[in-house]
Image (cartoon, rainbow, N blue to C red; front, side):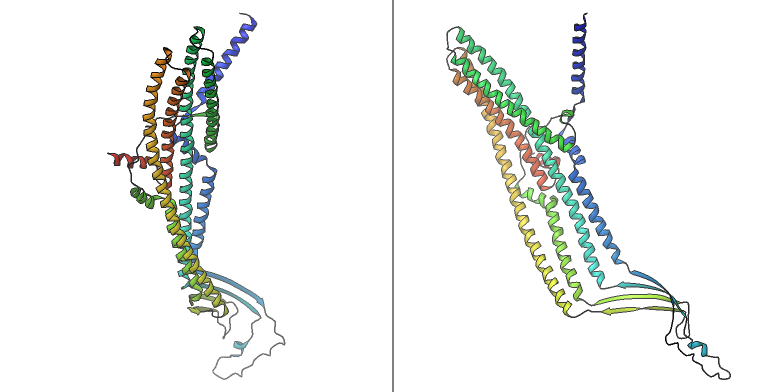
Length: 454
């Protein structure tokens, strides 16, 4: 074998190896795998996790306000008196202890004070505040779940869109072969004198239109797969999509049943419930400054330079009642009124948001019903268009019809099949949006549908 032949063989072997390697490197991913990878790789969800941690730490921080505060202070002072005090001398009485030293002033002030204070009435505000922080942590968790549901629905939309375009591409490839057959027939009619060149030109024009349509499909497929790869943080060439699902699961759940499911599981509704409770807590907290404060306190003071009137150790225990009243009171009154107004705003906003969610659910439910009818219409259209094309092809072989009628029948069949493919995958995307909206996994929604349809 010559040198050129050897080089060609090596080049062919290398190309074959690389082609096999790239093909084997591709991983077939199901929809569940795509969703799992996207949720794991999502930077936004990781940020949500940190947000949940932050709110939990915030709640834990306020928890320690339940416990009393302890203060320890130490004093070490050298005392100077100006003018110097005269020494107090008490005449000594026979039979009694000399008390002159009892009135000596100390040269040092060396003490240690330990005080424990526990406010009682402010514990009510602490309890309300801690409950508000705990609810805020729950809200962060529900927002994270809602965000994850939205990402899952977006992945499903890209997944089904890519498969839809793949099936349309296959349909276009089949149509191209069909047009090649028509072109051969038209050329045969031209050569035998049964038709002029316009027959071939018509088929050629239709092939050009088909090529443009296929190019649009391929370009959209590339964009959709790129979007899916960005969500999963992996190269587009490293995976393909694996699809093995029934084409259609009818919507048999009523809007009322879906509404009940939404009330129980939708994260946004749970968030609204907690926002209402937070508004109640903030309203109560704003009332606290208008209430007298009672605190229990106790402690011990040790004096290293004790005297008769200043003993070495002093224990104390008791309670303190305080109530600040003055111009600040009006400030607190207005703050309380503001909290009441903000509570009313929260409640009214919550009512409006629930109405919008109910309207959104009604729209999704009605949209699914329309898409069901589109699938049925497209399915019936395929059968009618296929029969019409069969008749036109038979007539064209006998030159009993024109190329225009034949191409029109072919286009009608392709449009019917394209409509069916589009309707099926759009229906699947709508089901995912519905499941993500009401806050349950799609497999549970599908299970509910299957149980209802029995």
